[in-house]
Image (cartoon, one colour):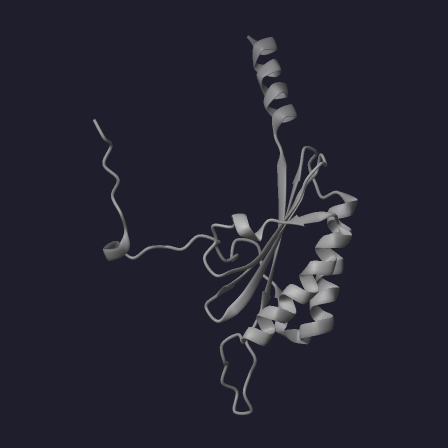
Length: 159
C-alpha cells in the first residue's frame, strides 16, 4: 500500500505546473482638488506603446484579435517555449490593469520571468510614475465580467 501511495504522490508532484502571476494597476490621474478622473484614451495608448516593445523583446506575439476579455487593450502570448509568458492589459473601474503570467513546469519563478516582471515595472514607472502599483496577492482584478442576475443567462440542454 505504501509503495502505491508513494507512486501516486510522485506522479502528482511531477505532473504539476506552476503559474506565476504579477498584476500591475495604473491608477487614474488626480485633479488639483484630489478627485480621480477616469483613464483617458491617451493613457490607454501610452500603455500599448510601453507594452509593445516589451512584448517584442520577450518574443511575444500579438493575439489581441483572439481576446475575449471585455475592454481589452492588448494581449500578447509567448509560443515555442517550455515556460510561456502571457501579457494582458485591459481597463476596469477607471484604471488600467496589466497581467503578466508565466507557466512553468518547475516550482518557483524562472530567471526570465523575474527579469520580465522587473523590467515591465520599470518601463511602466518610467512612463506613469507613482500611479503604477503592484496589486497584492488575492486582491487581483478578474479578467471576466460578473453579470448581474438580470443579465445572466441560463443554458438549457437540448434533448
